[in-house]
Image (cartoon, rainbow, N blue to C red; front, side, top):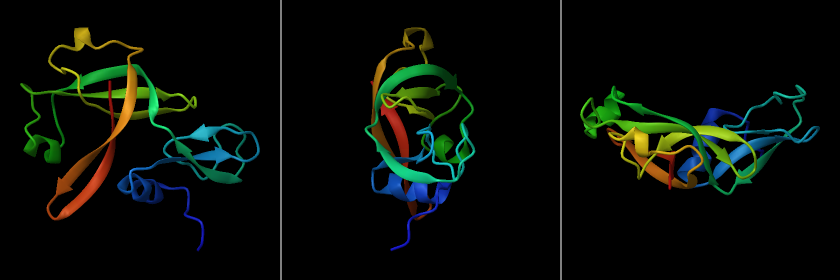
Length: 137
């Protein structure tokens, strides 16, 4: 079987299997999540897949009141915001994901540095179901 290309489609296929997969440069060891076909550190194209444990800490966040259509259908709006954050994984790479299990209406109680663990969240649009990466304290 041919190896999957380092792109968003392959990344989403792994998420649908509840795996957090990124790329690692064979030359310098730099990690990327989502995966990239070219290393952002040394520009090498010698990449390999690496699986992340999904454990990290909150590095930054924002509370969002204007939701995309599929989330608006789930009830997110000006009165019911949601949180998106930058998560620094134990492996050292940072990724952006939805933060669940926190009160988006009271962002003053959400703390940078909070330990987080990955959770897979279903996104449904029509008959399509897709897994999205989220993190929870």
